[in-house]
Each structure stands twice: as structure tokens, then as C-alpha cells.
Image 1 (spheres, helix red, strand yellow):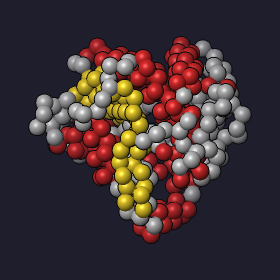
Image 2 (cartoon, rainbow, N blue to C red):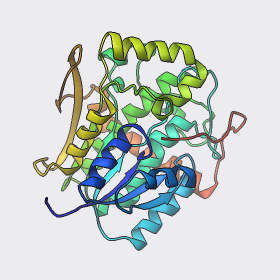
Image 3 (tube, helix red, strand yellow):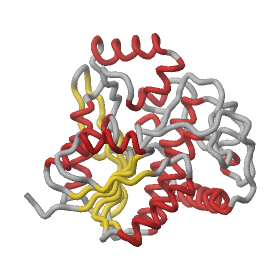
Image 4 (cartoon, rainbow, N blue to C red):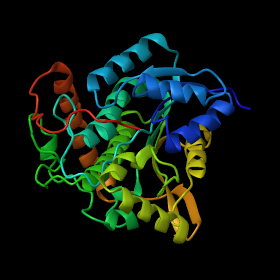
Length: 328
């Protein structure tokens, strides 16, 4: 085996992340894993062969994320790969959830927490891998269902805005909020690559992954529509065979983490569905909006300012909605 690498990863406690972590742990790599709470951390540690450095930080709490990033910078050696994999979706819920700063949780967890980690840790990493989704692209199968991804003029990312959606005008839609956050992931990766061109920055889509067991990525959506979610999973996974297995998706993530042939610069990989039970994993084109460097720069700037004001306690936003929730 090649020399073990030091990997820092979010979203390791379930689903794709857990499958990848098991493979990387078995291969002997050194893992620093960011978990939301001690219960999840203990459960994760019990599933690994080797001892991992498990850190606690709820990605909904940007101050906790900042503190963790600073601790990692001061206490650990260099990072070979920074893996930004955690994701939150609560499609089916009609009202937005917000963190303590008043920021809608999907945006806070899926995008802002990861940009904060990228801002503070990516400079010392040799590679950055970001889990996105094909639903960022309105022309793909998943992207065509429901409202399409699109950030508009990003008015919802303006400091002090009480809007729940990134575009600032669309009434709250949890499914679109998730799609928008995945669009943000690609734009963030594109801008990070411009700022740090001497390393691979890889965004990727695992395809539709619906595990048979409860919990994991769809747990919040199941609480809103348990029968509908189970029926959808049965039809998509078992009848039409449109889904990818968590194990195979974990293998794809492990490949992107370790592949020595990945060139420097930005790339987007997708696990494209070719037919029932057949996928092709490889580089592909992102949507037009996700490929726009001007949009990427504007999103980075607005997000950085939103993070800064959240950490400083300035301009708190409306916090009347359901408070802190969870991330994978």
C-alpha cells in the first residue's frame, strides 16, 4: 500500500461517508472525523478497526466549526485530503429551520460550514473533495423534479436578510434549498480552485443513494412523509433500479480521495445513470450556473461576509423558526 494519508472529513457517521471511512480505515489511513455530537462519535468509533481522531462540532453552529478548524490548525500535522461530505436535507417540511444566527439550516450546514472549513484548512491540504449532487443541474433527471436550483441575485445571502432561500424571493421550499446548497458546493469548489490552483479540487455526485435501513441522509424527509419516502425508495431502488448502493458510492468517494492521477485544478465527477442498475462514474460537465467563475466569486464573497458576521454576532437574523437541527 502507498504511504498512509491524513484525511479530515465531515459526514462520516452514516451513508456514503461511513462506507468510505470504513474502506479508508481498513487501508490504514489516518482519519480525523468531524461528528455532530458525542453519541454519534462513539457509535462511529465502534465501527472502525483503528483509532481515529474524532472531533465534535455541529456544522449548524458556525462558531463551533471555526473553533474546531483553529484547533486542527494548531494541533495536527498537515492534511493530505480535506473531504467536505456532510449533508442535510429535510424535503417535505413546510417551514425553514434556522441556526442560532438565524441562517436556514440547509445553507448553514451544506455550504457555509464547509466554506468556513475550506477557508481555514484548505491551504494546508493537498487535495479537497466536496460531495455535491446532480440535482444542482436543472437539466438532469433529479434536477428537473420540483423547483430548479438557482441562486438568482443571491439576495438571501445578504447580511441581515431574513429570507430563507438563497435567491431571497422564492417562498421556502426545502427541496429547492437542498438543490441550491449543492449548486453552492460546486461554485465554492470552483472559486477555491481559482484561489489555490496548485491542488485538485474535486466536486462529485454519487447519484441517487437510498439505503434500506432507516436513518442516514433521508431521515428528516422520512419524518415529514414516511409512507411516501418508503414507497419512493422501493420503486426507485427495487423496481426501477435507478439507485446506487451506499457501498459502491463509498468506493467512488474513496477513489477521489486517493487517486494519484487526479490533476490540479477543478473537476466535477458524476455517477451517471445509464439504465436500470447501470452507472458510469467519471468527469462530466456541471450546469452553466455552476461553471460561471463570476458567480463563484460573488458567492464566495457573500458567504465569507455572512460567516464573518455570524461569528462576530453582528446582524442576527429572524430566529422565530425551528432552531438547531442535525447534519449527517
